[in-house]
Length: 219
Length: 245
Image (cartoon, rainbow over all chains, first blue to last red):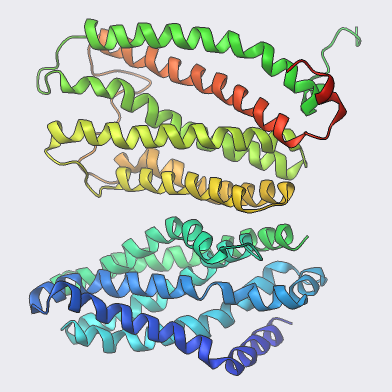
C-alpha cells in the first residue's frame, strides 16, 4: 500500500507539472532577488549565500505544503485513506515521500547552480547539496504537520507558514550553519550530523503527529 | 464516609466549574495585588544597587518572573490541551485557550524587558543566542496556537488541532530552559539553583516575591478568562440563563 500510494502521488503530481515547477521557479527567483537587492559585491554574496539559499528553500517548501493533502482532502480520498485498516502513519509517510521527491528534490538539484551565482567554491556547493538533501525531508515531514492541521481552512497558506516556520528554525540553523562552515573553511561535519539526527527524529515522530492532526481535521 | 468525600469530577462540567471559579478569583487576585506591591517595593527600593550594573538591573525583577511564567504557562497549556483532547473534556480545552493569551503576554513582556535590560548591560538590544532565539520561537508558537484556534470555526476541532500544535511545540520549553547550559553564550546561566544563590538576600527575596505575584496573578486572570470563554461557548445552555451574571 505504501509503494502504491507513493506511485499514485507521483503520477498525480506529474499530471500537474505546472504546480511543481512553480515551486522551483519561486526558489530560483527568490535567490536571484537577494544579489539584486543587496549589491553584487563578491565577498558579501559569499557571506550571505548559505542563509539566502536556505531561507529560499524554506519558503519554497512552505508554499508547496498545501499540496500534500489538499487535493485528496477536497475530493474525499483523504477520508478514505484515513479509514483504511493500514496505520495512518504509513499513509502520511508515503505522501510525504512523494511530496519530497516532487517538490524538494528539484530544489536540491538546482541549488548548486544557484550557489554558483553567489560565487561559492565547489566544496561549498557539495555541502549545499548535502545539507539540503538532509534538510528538505525534515521540512517536508514537519510541514506535513502544519498542512494537516490547517486542512480546508480559509487563509490556510498564511496560517501554515505561521505554524510551521517556528518548527523549521532549527533545520535552518543547522543547514545554513553547515554551508557557512564550509565557506569559512572549517568542517561542516558537526552541522551535517545534527541535521541527520534531526532527520531521524522527525521521521520517527512527525508522521505520528500528522496522522493525529489528519484524524482531527477530517472528522 | 463516601458521601463526605468531594466528587472532584463534578467540577469537570463547565456548569459546575463556573461558580467555583467565580468564588476562587478573589482568593488569588487580592494576594497577587498585595505581592506585586510588596515585590515592586522590595525590588526597586530595598534591594541594593548592583556593583556592576547600577540601577538598570532592577528590570530583571520583572523579566525573570515573566520569562518563567511564559515557559511554565506553555507547559500548562499543553497539558490542559492534551487532557482536553485525550479525554474529550471541553473544560480542559477551554482552560488551554484561556492560558494561551496570558502566556503570550508574559513571553512578550520577557522579550521586551530582556531587550531593555540588555541595552545597558550588553550594549545591544538583541543577540541571536540560543535562549533568546528559542524564547522568540516560544512567542511564535503562542501566536500560532492562538491563530489556529481562532481560524477554525468548529470549536471542538479547534481545540484538538490546538492540542496537537501545543504538544508538538512543548519540546521548545526544555530547550529554552537548558539552552544556557548546552551553549555558552551571552545570556547568563542559572543564578538560582537548588543549592545556592549568588545574589544578595533582598534581591532574592524580591525575585521570589515577584515570581509568586506573577504566578498567582496568572491563576486569577486565567480563571476570569475561562469564565468568559465558558459564557461564550455555552451560550445555548439553560444553566447559563439561570446563573447570576
